[in-house]
Amino acid sequence: MKKASIYWICILCISYLTGWGQSTTNPLPTAADTVPSSVGTSSKATKISHAEPLYLDLVRDLGARKGEREWNVGTEFSRQGGMTSWHPFVEYEFAPINRLGLEVEVPFQLLVPTSSQELPTTTFRVHSIKTSVQWTYAVIRPWQTSLAIGYTNELVVNSGGIHAGKAIFTTEEGHPFLVAAKKWGRHWNSLVYAALGGQLPMHGAIRSDGYELNLALHYVIPQYKAFVGVELYQYRNGPLQEQTVRPQVRIALKNNLLLGLVSSLPVNGTGTASSFLRLIYEPRRR
Image (cartoon, rainbow, N blue to C red):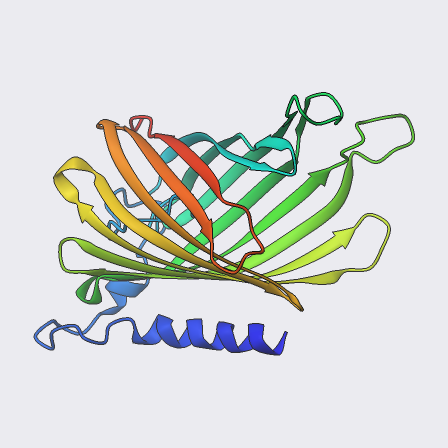
């Protein structure tokens, strides 16, 4: 927890210092750049278009405007221990008012044993139900910087199925997080995500679930809504740790339909290599 606290302090510092290196000819930010006027009423609230990670997805865009919404479907694929594992998901996110994003996600799990292994038959189940909220509390236009805070709640479904007398959910997980994103000119984008985790078993005491740190860097081609980039992910919970590099690319199939492809490459030997895809659909504004 001590190291996690240090990371939180570092992210807070980044929140205030993400403008370093910017030309001093830019005007200083005003209150209108950092605090939304008439929240929830202006359809043209200040918003900076940031390239956001494909794997560790955010809750709606930073600085989202009222009425924006998005559907995501996708899956992660990996093989380990004689088992082929698929993790499909369905996700819906929307902005009821300016700068506030809400999200509901249902992850699934499909396990397929290989023919050479004497393992149980193929299983498919709902893994959990996730809900998230994200508030962009600052959009600093002269610095091309957005800052947000949020919370994700996940209810893990009983893997043994739903039977009489058994709880539907086995664990509740919570993840408060901070986000700082900055555009460096027309093409380069950087983003920092930091989160703490906690678990509450249905029959037990709350316990720490470590921390997550995700650094993302992308090169964007604006006219095509495309980018290439990488996520550098770190997770630590006591002696347990995971470090993963995730190169990625996003392409536009249509103006409001995007496809993201990601590879996960563990760097410390504790994780599993995997492939991931995300299909992003943005319905037209009503």
